[in-house]
Amino acid sequence: MDDAAATDCELQGLGVLVTRAAHQAAPLCRLIGAHGGRAIPFPALEITGPRDRAGALRLLAGTFDIMIFISPNAVHRGLPLLPGGRPPAGTRVAAVGRGSARALAAAGVPVALVPGGRYDSEALLALPALARLEGKRVLIVRGEGGRALLGETLAARGAQVRYAEVYRRRCPRADAAPLVARWRQEVALVTATSNAILENLFQLLGGRGAGLLRETPLLVVSPRMRERARALGCRRLLLARRADDKAILEAICDWHAGSRAGTGGTHAGRG
Image 1 (tube, rainbow, N blue to C red):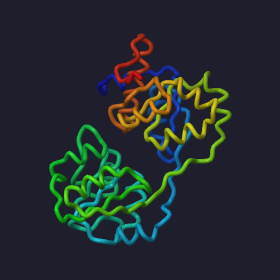
Image 2: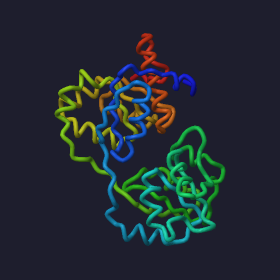
Image 3: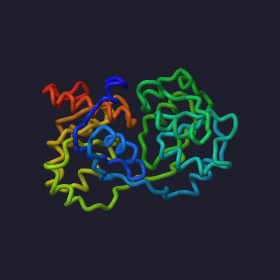
Image 4: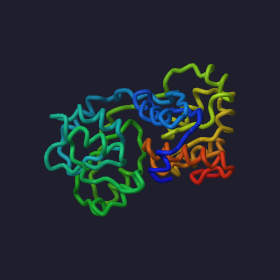
């Protein structure tokens, strides 16, 4: 769907469950509402400080050739821990995704490396600037327990890789019973933007709610997430082109239009 089509999209009261962390959900909720949908916020992820803040501070005070920010949360949590609130001069800054790049730019931090099109570790690793890294010191700024692919691949290319873990993800406390009770009447589509959110959602919803989730159209933002959702028993899957709010809205609009026309939408990833 192009920009004009997304602008013309009318969701006609479509109930969309938004599962982003509470501090990140509002922009997508506003977009859905602006196009006639009804956003239902149900945060399935909570972001909090790291267990080893002192260790993160020590690493962030070091000298590195390249500093990679994995997510907007890595930017928002990591920059305040840096001496002077920004990477030192001479350090090349990389962002895995568009959201991270925007967060860095908003903080006045120039971004030297960001993938185009896809926004994931694989796309970042495909950049020519990261092909040969013999002797380069690389700091990956991330949450606790992130994916190993990026660091392992950079190390295999000769880099000295360290991790500054500046936040942790946890499952929030939430009473899902009211949501489960009105699910069939209100929830037409579920959005999830990370595997952690998806797994927490199953945990929060309980047995009956998990069954409802499996039979409800679920929008995910990467092929890796789609594989995980299938493994959890979800079959009515949609894949957004990217993880940003605009791409998620486009996928919602496309699916809604396709559902009305009886085609299922061109973004739908059939299980």
